[in-house]
Length: 112
Length: 114
Image 1: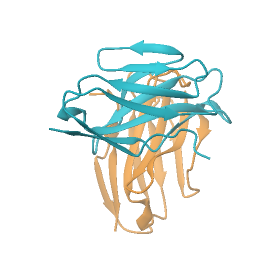
Image 2: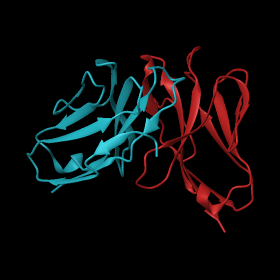
Image 3: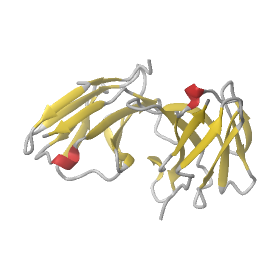
Image 4: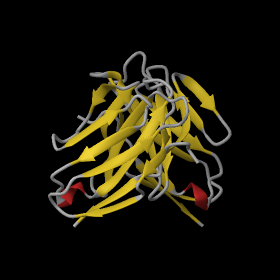
C-alpha cells in the first residue's frame, strides 16, 4: 500500500501556475509534509514544508486541508527551469518519523 | 552546494565485487540517510544513522551494510555486486532525526556494475 500518491506526470506552459496534489491517507498526527525537487542526476532539493493550513516561501506555496490527508504544492508562474521531478514526503506511521520514504514523484514538464 | 560530500562520483566495477561509498554530512548534522535510485525503482530509502547509531532500515539488501563513524561520516558497503545494483546512490544529512528536519542531499555516486 503506497504511503503517498501523486500523479506520475504533468505538463504545463511557461507562465502558468502549477498545482501538484499528493494523497497521504495514513499520515500520523506528528508528521510533517515536505516537498522536494529533483533535477536529472542531482540529489533532491528541499522546496517547502508544512504541518497544516498554508505555508508560503519564495518559490512555492503548500496547501494542507484540515484533515491533512492530502496536500497541494503550488508553483506560481513556472518557467522552463522548473522542469523536474517533485516528491511529496511524509513520515511512515509504522516507524515513526525516522523512516523517510519518498513517493513515486511527479515528473513536471514545462512547455515553452 | 548542499554541504554534503559523496565520493567517488562514479564507480565502475564487475559483478561479484565489493565497493564502499563514502558520505560526509554537512557540518553539525547528526543524521545520515542513504538512498538508492534506479531508473525503474525511483528513490528508495536504504538506511538511516543518527549520531553513530542505526535508527531506521528500509529496503536494504543483506549484501549491503553501512555504518556511521565517530566523526559522523558514513560509509555504505555493497558486496557480491549484481547487475541490478547499478544505480545512483545518494546520501543525505539532517540536523536531527525526524521528518521536520530538512534533508540535504549530496550529488550522488553513480555505480555501474558490468
